Structure formats: structure tokens, C-alpha cells
Image (cartoon, rainbow, N blue to C red; front, side, top):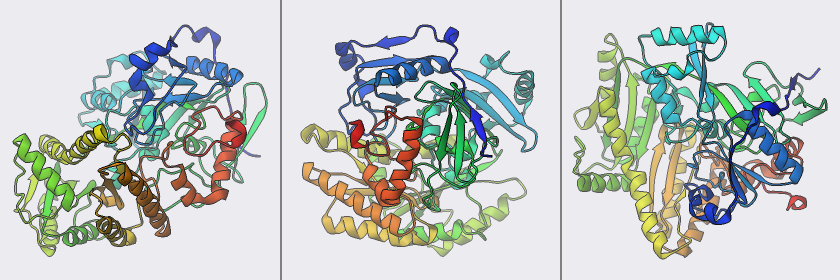
Amino acid sequence: MTPRIEARAPNPADIGNMKVVSDQDVINDTYALYLDDESHSFDGTAEKLVFPETTDQVAAILKEASDAGTPVTIQGGRTGLTGGSVPLGGTALNLEKMTDLLYINYHEKSGHYSIAAQSGVLLEDLVKAVMTKDINQLQGKGTSEQQKALERFRAEVDDFSFPVDPTETSAWLGGIVACNASGAKTFKYGAVRNWVYRIEVVLMNGDILDIERGRFFAKDGKFEIVLSDGNILELAIPTYSMPKTKNAAGLFCGSDMDLIDLFIGSEGILGVITEVELGLEQLPRNIMTVMAFFKSEDDAIGFVYDIRSADSPVQMDFLEYFGPNALEMIKEKAASSGITVPALSNDTEAIVFFEFDYTDETMEEKVMGLETVLNKYNSSSESSWAGMDRAELQKMKTVRHFVPETVNGLIAQRKAQYHDVHKIGTDMAVPDEALREYLKFYRETLDAQGMEYVIFGHIGDNHLHVNMLPRNNEEVKQGMDNYMTFAKKAVELGGSVAAEHGIGKLKKDFLFVMYGKEGIAQIQAVKKALDPKWLLNRDNMIAIPESFR
């Protein structure tokens, strides 16, 4: 028998009043930012904005919209780069008022703590609360076991945090789960998916699912959901092959997969995630952070291959890369900001930024091993910038952000003259063995065109961002054509067209390249089963069938 999960209907007594904005002048003026995201690629519109505070209120909104046939677009912090949270009509459902921390659990078997919160909590606020143990609002919340876990957590001497560390810390928890976010430390810890213990999801019909990891697994490629009205909904899992790389493209699939993984990374097309429970990790007591400078890009890539290998003398938490053009931006921004980057010389052509932990017993061995690998590729500890505390790491992160800050500034200037101009940033990842070939393909393609570009990103996962910087409207088209070329090459090499930013409204054509007509049809079938009127987050991930337009 296929395992079944039972949905519940919302409790009418818990719905209450909520903030609703329906005046078009107010929406277009006071709430204009709610019609956009960080991609700045769509001119959003909404008939009304709603701001629920509870799961039951979300359920009531969706039920009303379903009955009326009104499209609903889910919004978090709107920090995405794919237009996913931009409404194109209908209702914008914004979760900014769902900001409660809910409980802490302790898991005896794994020795991990986890913390639950509503989806509107900012990642940076959650991390701050956990690291400082400033979690008084949890007092008296949850079960007796969760209260015991809270007291145990407060008594811990060590520091804890959410380990995945997505780059955009102002993102909201619901969004990072819905998009299976990742970042630099995905190299060590994996993406958000690995750390999601429980979610609460509201379906388009208003039914609510409470999904705990490890409880509901597929059988013969199917799930069954018992709806609140007693009807049974059957979901057939897609059967396409997923790349063996960092990946945030399409629905997760596997014949015996956990139901929770179907919703993680689904970009809100299947339901609204209203609560999340995330695993926490004890922070190492000692860290060393390094910006290693190399005289050639080839040396930098060689270092990366050696230092991340199975027999590496140092196991890294993350490995980040900055190519020659990115390096020029860092130099210029540092000079104008009055910041000195230690050991950075004029003959530096590439940077590898990394971090590792150590103990008093292992420090000497790790440093000596690192020095050997650096020397092999014409670098050294003396010609690198190293720090041994979190304050120094923060300085390095400031320098790291010089690159996207410069890129965004250039694009803003050009967009003022050419309306269609926007940053075109790739998000592809390839298998380890394909890194050199793919980087060479990027450079040869762009250099031949004379396109302005910069390359940087998560090289530990072979996930480099190529930011193309169009100088006019014609180069925007060239850049988008390049993106398709790069997507096809990534798939040819066994990689993903979206490693961390998802598909949203911008990249549906690239998902088609990855999974083909049959794979897209399988995603559409899951969507239609859970949202038969095709109302929730329509236009995201997959095209709307003509019958719903």
C-alpha cells in the first residue's frame, strides 16, 4: 500500500483579520517594491496584497482564491534573481508578518539541535538568535520535550548556527527552503535540503500538510494525500535523471524519495511553505580563513583540484574563486574605499578564497600541508591574506562583495540609458572533471564576442557565476543567447542549468534544455494534481498550458 499523509482543513476560529491592500494607487506607489525582485526583469502587477500572520490565514486566502479562480503569487523577501516572487496579476501573498520562532528540538540519535520558525523570519535574524542564544520568545512554547531541548540548548557552551550559509542572508526562511538555497559552504554541508527536518505546507485548496522528514516515503514512484474532504490525491513522481552536481532546477525526484523533498526546491508551485524546522550545527572553535593569490588562472584551478581531492592535507569548509576581471574590480573598489588587501600584488591574476577549521593538535600539520599545495602552484602563505578569527573573515567577506556591488552599480548606470539592460548572471554547475573545459568554454565564447563579463563564485562545487554586463539593448539579446549556449553546454557535460537560484519566470527555457518535453510534462502533472486550476505561482518553473491562459 502506498503511504498516505492526511491533510487538515484550516480552523475557522484561527483565521481572524489580516492586512489587505487593494487600492491600486496605493499598491503602485507605497507598495511598488512588492511588484519587483532583485532580477528587475518584470513589470509586476497585483489586484491586491495580503499579509497573513498564521498558517490558517494562508489557508483561507488560498481557498478563497481557488474558489474564485484568482492567481496567487507567494512573496518572501523578494531577494530572488529569477522573478519568482513578482506577481503578474491576481493576489500577492506576502509572508512578512509570519516572523515567530516556534520551538527547538534535540535529536538524540544524531546529536543535532533543530529550530522551527515561521517562513517570514529572516535568515540573518535566525542565525543571530541562535548564535547569541537570544531566544526568549521560545519560553513556554512547544511540547515539554521541546522545552527541555530549549533549556539544554541554552546551557551549551559552544556556538551553533545554521551551517548552509546562503550568500543572501536577508532572504527569508520560507524562500530558502522553497528554492533549496545554497552558498559557499554547500561545499561542506550540502544545500538547504539536507538540513530541513520539517515543513508545514498549505495547498491551493486550503488544505494543510504537516510533513516531518523520515515519515512519508514514496512507493512505486507515487505518493497519496488524503485531503480534508476524504478524497485521495495521487502524485506520480517525475522519472527524469537529476544531475550529480549542485542543483536547484525542477522538482526533486526519486522512486523511494521522502515527501518533504518534493516541496523543498519546488519554488512554490505546489504549495505555500508556512513553517520550517532547520537543523543546526556546532561551530568549530578555531577557523582559518585565507585569500590565496595566484599569478595565473591555470595555477588557481590546479590548486582547487588538489586541495579538494580525497587525499588533500586540508578539508575545506568552502572554496570561492575570483577570475582576472573580478580581481580588477576588487582592486578598484578597495582603492576607492581606502581598504588595503594584504599581500595583493600587481602580478596577481586570480584569487581562491577558502576556510578550514583546526585544533591545537592539527594546526601545524594542516598549515604545512596547505603550504605545500600553494607552493606547487606558485603561491605561498606569505603571499596570501590569512586570518584566524571571525572578525577577519568578515573583512574578507566585505572584499568578496566588492565584485557584485561593482557589477550592480555598472548595470544601474547603463539601465538609466537603456531600459532593457540588466545583469545576466549564469547559475550553472558541472561535474568535477568538467571544470577546466567549461571555464575555457565560457572565456572563449565571451572573448570572441567582446562581451564585458566577470567570473567568480563557488568553485568548490564547480559552480561559477559568469556575470555578463551588456552595454546596450543589443548586447542584452546577445547575453541571453549566450545563456542558452552555456546551458546546453552544461547539460552536455552532465551539469545543471540552475545550481542555486532556481528557475522562476526567467529560466523556463533552460529547464526544458535540461529535462526535455517529457520531463516538463511530468512536472506539469504533479502541478496539476495539487493545483488543478493552475493558480499558485503560475509562470514559475514551467509554462502555463494554453488551456489556463
